[in-house]
Image 1 (cartoon, rainbow, N blue to C red):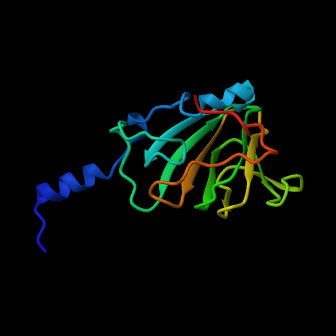
Image 2 (cartoon, one colour):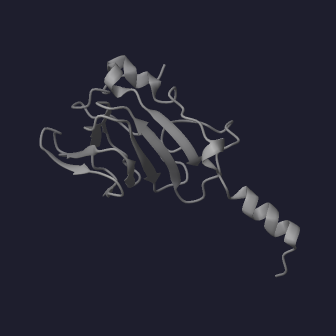
Image 3 (cartoon, one colour):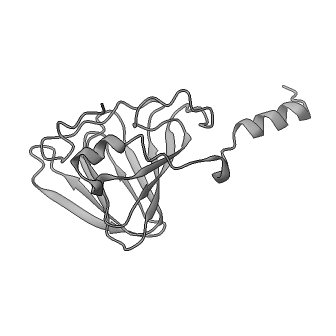
Length: 169
């Protein structure tokens, strides 16, 4: 198969999402602040929309084929609430700051195990395992979030999560 130079230029340009073309979306998870300001955080979408909802009209997002990739900005002291992705694994890769990541018992959520992650540390949480995170540093934390599906289902919030019963409206 022969590809023209113009075709290659078009291909490579369609595969790039620059930092300068991204923005911090503080609204997509803004509904979670109904449970408190400590749940305020921003998503920066690169590939697909993650599991935060429908962002089909955002033409800056590169289309997802097999996974989604975004960054999350978590202010100092802020919390990513306990939630479960039933259909996909989720990866957190720390770019800045210090996160405490917790996995919760699937049976009742009262038993937990936590680890502290810093610069260039990564955790992969399997599908079906409830997880939460907290910025334990004194500056914003920035981390990559990779979810293993083109369009993951919205997560659920178990009864032990502060988001249980909080609606998106």
